[in-house]
Amino acid sequence: MDDIKLPTFTLRSHASKVTALTLIYANAVPNLVSGDEGGKIVKWDLITRRPLVAIDSIEAQIIEIKQLDPDCIAVLSKDYTLRVYDFDLSNVLFETKVNTLNFANFIIYKEPHSDWNTLIVCNTKNSENIDVYKFQLNDFKSLKRIFNNLDFKNTMDYMKNERFPQIEKLGLIMKLLKVGELIYCGFESGVIIAFRFSEDESFIEVVYISVLHCPNPILDFCYDEISDAVLSSSTNETIGKHPIIRPSTGENRPLTLEAFDSADYFVDKEQKILLYKNACISVNGDQLNITFKKIGHLKVLESYLLLSSWSGKTAILDKRTSNLLTSFCKSKSSVLVSESSQGSFDSNSVKQKDTTFSKIGSMTGFDPSFNTMIATDIVSKKQTLGQQRRNYSFLEHCWCFIGYDDGSICAHRL
Image (tube, rainbow, N blue to C red; front, side):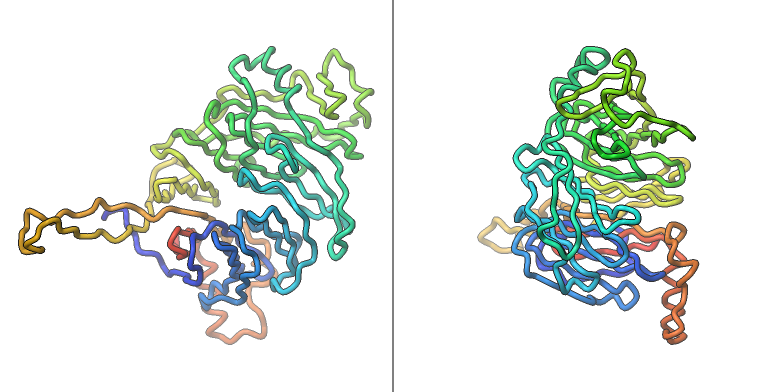
């Protein structure tokens, strides 16, 4: 029972496993948006701790929810569909069919100074490869594919011969993450590949490859803003730390694949992939060894590292020392089972079922130091003094939100 810490509060609206959690920012205090195994989506007010909006028009598991620009919410669901809603979840602004066979997430972002948006997902037919699309909101016919069935096989075959003889194949795409202009892809084999698009988006350049987790699959990614690195988790007791490879100041790069000297670069003309032969390659790399395995959910705050495992436990680590500060779990009720015809009066016949923990479907965290809205919108003039006080109270702390298989969402103040 020492592991069981009561949550600060619990949100209840879902009847099935919570499979997606994300914080969306339009004011100083963010809203939490949750999705479940049955397709229900709920937008929460974290001050009143009540649902603002709930929709159940999707009849499939919600895989991931992301904020697109300030006013839109993108939802990937198991009915092979990506939908973009307005901020109130009342209108679908865009919708397209995508591959969701392997539960991989997606990347979506608005192009700067443009009406176009970019979508990066698994290829329609092959979950080991990538498709890249462009689209405009409120125009369902605007979808155009920029890269079709992007395959890193030739690149990895070259690297296999040179550096990684133990890598047989990449396997399924497990996780995708965008940091600045870089796209990080985590594969079933444990390989991590980071690439960026050329200026005219006619080819991609691979800038980083890691085999730190091989042969274990990548389970989650997150960006550590303080150390400017990407953290990764797998089924083993290792958290990987991967650098952000940025172009040199004033770097003038050719715009076509043909312009690169083949002596210094590996060029896959068929896939339109460029690899600098002296690119950053990580075999062991920086890593954090922990006492937890199978970290399915990973989140980093300014001072904390949040880890949720398949076992149902969430650990809060001091990011500077890696020491365990506290842990959370939700215990399922133990059941007394009698195997005697004499009933429960026979003390020898009563067996207590082993305690198990509720499984975790999603986890996220809030850090007020990362919220740029706070400086400009800490208090609305329309709020009462009581509302302002509750806002300040929430924003004084970091928070961890955990979605469980019983449909509950537990909020822990750190």
